[in-house]
Image 1: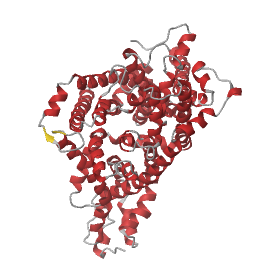
Image 2 (image 1 turned 45 degrees about the horizontal axis):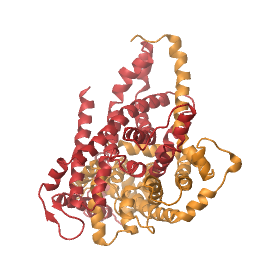
Image 3 (image 1 turned 180 degrees about the vertical axis):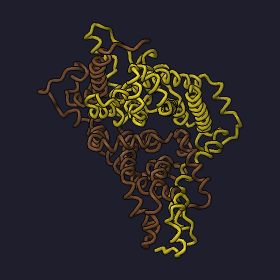
Image 4 (image 1 turned 30 degrees about the horizontal axis):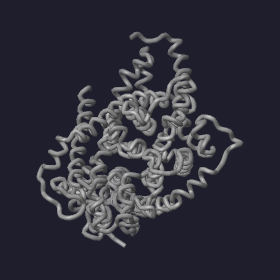
Length: 289
Length: 309
């Protein structure tokens, strides 16, 4: 193929590019926008006229019915509790262990870190069955411990934080040592502040993962009392696919869209406000391969 | 407070000790054990132990209660001779074919465009493409259920408006897989764009300048320079998506429940079926077979993309 003419090379790209990107971006935004807008339509209209929207008929009916029908508030509370507990465990103990791996020499260090690397490559799905049995043995089915502890300090966080902390100059740590800082004091007052950008990335990624986590919660915490937000959402969707509900299709659909909108808004807001950390977190997080 | 002896204090900050971990007989020696202990405890309890347990379990017949019966390779031979197991792998393989080629091409195109400083509104696009990635999977899966409903869905409304007939997006075995694949594409392409973008941004811009002077077209530049330079990143993206697709569970679980006629029972969902039927020995064996499949595929892609050099 010979190179295209100069005019095409100069002009075509900018126009075609812009059109291509705009269309694609709209396609990416459309389903979410459609869901959020439709959630405010009367249930019957969602299915009779899926594409139209008459602002004068906007209503909160779907939301009020949904709140009455499914334990979504409970789901939010459970997710918030898990987020707070699991998130703080990850954000404290992962950098701490990573600091141990990065800046000290100790017995079995090679073996331990090697095991961390191996688990990085194993699909998480392998652990579902034995973990479930372990939880049964411990009597932890449908408890917060079961939602929080497995995976709280995951291998990936350790691996990433170790890379970051290894880059902190030893001179800095030694200077603190000379000043009489304890080993933990060095971690707390020197290492953590220095790695703050990466820590922010880890925080954002951790919050996203915990909030969106579904496979483990649906296996271990499916009772109404313990169901996380995502589990509550999925039970609603199954009412449609499985036709397991007496209510009519329109009503369930309305509730579904109301629930989905409410579930995605918090994360979307966090994302838009913290997008720089998000993108950096994803970029840094993706280096694991 | 730890006060290191003067001799060590003196040697520590020297340039030669830069890379060497610290050695000291004092509390410094104890400190790392304390630091890694919480992680190790959790890791052994909820990572290593269950892994070993699965291995043992995979050689037994156990229904979740009572005593487990040793069956040797029984679970493995059962699965390997079971058409349902192979069809779950087959479904995942078809999903892979429907997703990965399209995704890599689109994501690479978008990443190249977003990498170009002349493209306007780059910040907006980055956010727009990532919106599906950050929204909870279950929520978007539900949106799919509603939008692709045969009778009432928005997609069929558009088709009808264009004078086209309804399509059973989620109710026919022919369309259910592509519809799920589209969900996966929509959800994760923004993420792949960002990954590829990170690869592109690590390319030295002078490489392009040199070739522009030589008169290379944009397409030639892309094919003969950009692609080889981002090969590692591409490989990483492919491996990442292979892992994700063969473990795909929530999408079919929420959207199709594996149907119609098992056409969307992916490897991940099939594995979950053993759990719901309390057939835990078979499930454990299935886990390991899936790990082997995923690892072989990942290593295969790594080799394939390396050997093209």
